[in-house]
Length: 105
Image 1: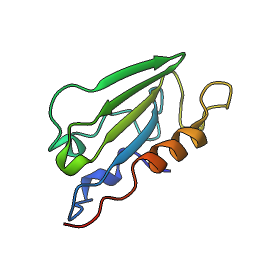
Image 2: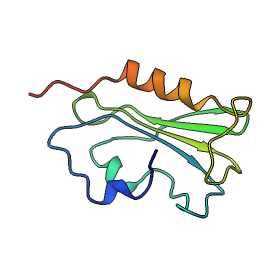
Image 3: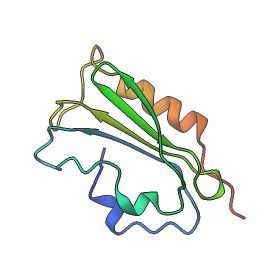
Image 4: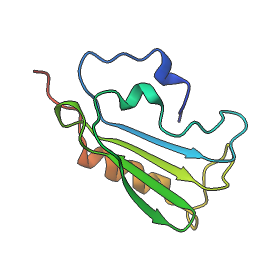
C-alpha cells in the first residue's frame, strides 16, 4: 500500500479512478490530503462523509467518469487501522468493485 509518493511520476494515458487511505498522524509518509496532481480534471468540491475517526472525501466529477476517493484516518500513524476503527480491506474491495478500470477510448 502506497500513498503520497507515487503520484509524482505516475502519468496514466487515460483517466483512472484512485483510492487513497492515509493516517493523519503518519510521520513516515506525511499526510498530504489528496495529492494535487490527482485532482487535475476534477470539478467542484468533494462529497464528505464522516464515520468515527474516518473522513472520506470523494471526487466524482472527474475526467471520463473517473472517481478519486481519500480516506483520512484521524490520528492513525503509519499502520493499518484495526477493523474496529476502520475496515480498510472492505473499503478497498468496495471501491474497486464499483470503479473498475475504464475502457480505452
